[in-house]
Length: 252
Figure 1 (tube, rainbow, N blue to C red):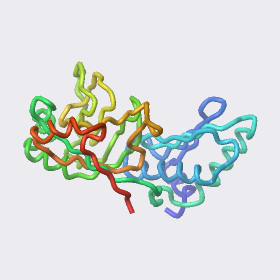
Figure 2: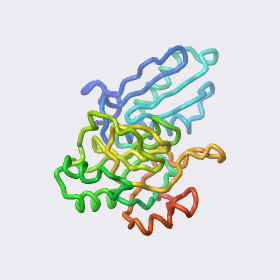
Figure 3: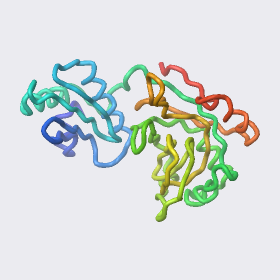
Figure 4: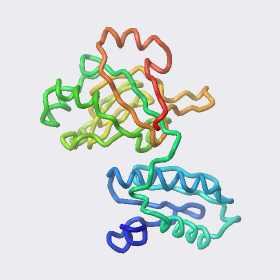
């Protein structure tokens, strides 16, 4: 695949869709996979670095880049032409990840009464609880997007056995810092909320900090690991502050 134009001829992706009177959505796939998420992150970064006049907002979803612009500054045809030109510039599916990303290590207690659905999730994945903890605590995952609640990351992709469905009924509530799993993804909850995802781990990090200059702790493109800790260690960690024992380092 030499460029995005070749990709479009063979698969129909990427696609540029109009969103209302002032937006475009550039989609790289219709379902989550690693290359499409990489493309969305890299394409948004390229738009931001280009510094186009009239662009008022950019964001990413799991497989798409959103752009909002001032229609009094550019008409739709002009903005679409710019997006098409940028798409044809390179193979976005293999583009380097944006700079400034960080690797987070977030201590997690798995199972116990703090995360009561570990055994159920492990059975759905066809592994033992011990094997589940080993995989979930040692797999390095990417923040693919932020959504559903303020600062809440969707992370992946997990190994194939974790392509387990969401529940058919809702869990009434999981707490802030809950680590949940389904469809080869982890979600780290920033608020207390009902969920259809299985609660397998508990962290003490507070992801949404409205009082801070940067309210969202994790950013799309960051990576994370969730090393296992004992309940005793977790009891100390959860009183250590809003980071909950988490550390981060620059990804080089």
